[in-house]
Image (cartoon, rainbow over all chains, first blue to last red; front, side, top):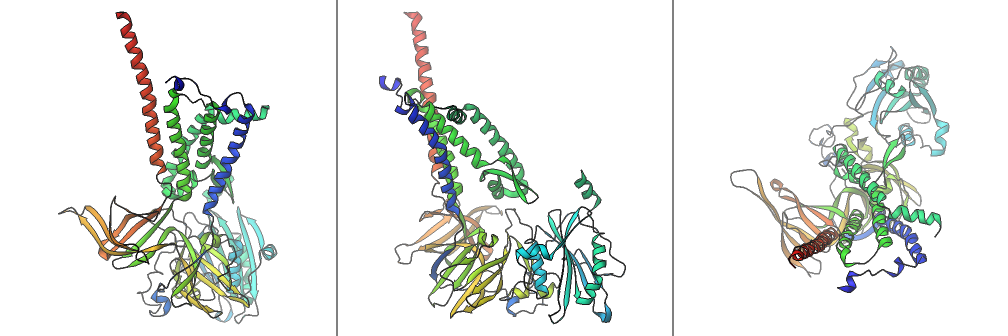
Length: 235
Length: 389
């Protein structure tokens, strides 16, 4: 008992300040390094392996053409509600000659812009949560619809016009593809608002959309957040 | 010892630091508990506890607003260890305190290891079905499978993080580059025919052109899962092979041929293959007589290894998991109408640590109070004996 009741100091704890200092100095970096090492265990790595032959998962029948798209039977996938951006929305005033079309589940607003000979242009207003892949991806999505090659990140700045109005930041683009069979043009704008991204897109025959562009830009000036949101922002 | 080093030491060994850290962890746990309403258990753990800092997004930038679990826990660990190293005096009277603190240190380390190493998967089996893999219900992967060999499938599995980061992948087993274009953490697919209008048009191959992808908000709810989707371009030596739409709703079901090989590709739940297989023989769902209250769920499973080293039947039921090859298979869900059973498959190499640390702490407290009790009793005996003499 006598031994245990007395103090047995470890060598580094008394009279050896140098080794004590090293102990402590090394302690923190050591712990941090081991933390970093452990954290590295979860790195995303591409894996490759061989497994016995497996039966592939079947495609939904509606995609293999076994069920016609119009029938309700295969629409299980399509019938899932499409979440668009919820919450307070933007408001706008459309020019008189744009004919409102019924808004669908996907669209917040929808207008037909009449042209000559029944070739109308289509103005769609949609909103989706988040950044929906970012500016470049969405602008390239529109370019894809015109069969134009995608823009590189470096060319993005030159291809867009940025407008700040009514407390909103618009990214406006104007693309045409006269080479394509239908010779279409898109004048569109992206607006981040309240955790969502709003898309205003005018698409249709090249000449009609080019003629309508000033009207579209004037229309963008009428797009504004609801009064409550503006008040919040100005506070 | 110079002044800086001394300051550094005094900071890490101080009891004030301990108190501040404990108070911070109280606040952190309180805030995280409240936020569970919005984020659910898993996301709260990731945001508050498995992070160095709790981040708030201001615009596009994450701003640290509060120390996270890793930082507080790590500092507590450093504080505890360095205080012990600094003040260490091995004495019998303090043995209980040492044991208790050793248990606490082990608990902190154990939680860290669990958060880093624990893997949770599921295995969904229909009666009669055999599987040699489990699936993650949180992580997904892009599987590109070379199906040319009639006996084997050669799989290249790319974690979805790499798709999200748009990392180009050149793998020695693939004769093409994989270039992720767009990634949606959660998305709804609908048929283009039934939803004309504004839609991504990137896909040029596979079933993608028939479909419209609509991004959906990321869900944190426990009973919902996210269905990610991505556009992926494959580029061979002669140029692009096309851009595919992949989604966990389509699994690995799209096929194509290139360079004399047949491939299958798709986004699927991340798989973990095992060197053995499980066959679901029978599911049983017992209820208390005359009620709908479940009494017991059980799955009779046949466990087999390829070389028949192991081939036996196992009954898995509530609180009686199967432990095999470092994995634990729990009875998780059951759909007795469809004769389907879902097992939860957990790998946690450090699962014993919390038990050991709790035992250490309990033992330490017993020893410490025991020593005091014995000392106190001895003093009282001495005091009561004194007047008599």
